[in-house]
Length: 161
Ligand SMILES: Cc1cc2nc3c(=O)[nH]c(=O)nc-3n(C[C@H](O)[C@H](O)[C@H](O)COP(=O)(O)O)c2cc1C
Image (cartoon, rainbow, N blue to C red; front, side):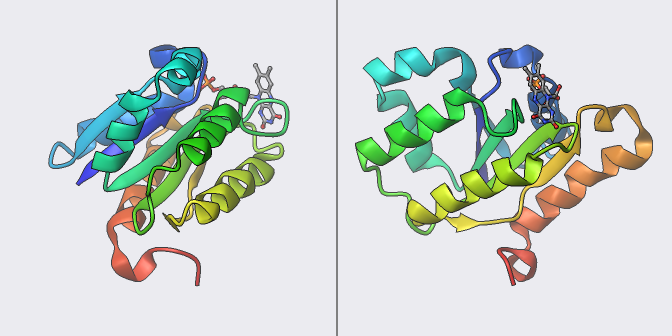
């Protein structure tokens, strides 16, 4: 499977959130992970959307990966969603999900915002992973990302029932 990670943190590769996606990449070499630094390059994507369009078209699973900042997704994710809608790229039938880190304060609001926009885009939504910013530091919580990815690829568990 080709997994497109839309890294919405302005910290880029130093983001706590994207470390979870790196962790999943290390656990699952059988999948291809492609990372787009949306949080750092959004201004560039406003001028030339073609790299994002191509990556979206090639992806089997689109993974919005971002921190919760001031009760919602960061601006860069909001702007990316606007650009995707403006471009009109056809994503219908593809799968989408999300990984966030936060202190669980309004993380539900951020997840709902991204889910609702994914529904607008005709994507099939898999319930996301809302991790604590310290989850990767303990063996028990390190199991959660693996369970999340299994959910993404398990037809029976996909979506909301
Ligand atoms: C300016 C700012 C605002 C934040 N707002 C929230 C918030 O509303 N809710 C929450 O649970 N955590 C909040 N946090 C905590 C971040 O979500 C958390 O530190 C996250 O892991 C940072 O991820 P990153 O390294 O990928 O950017 C905030 C952090 C910062 C710096």
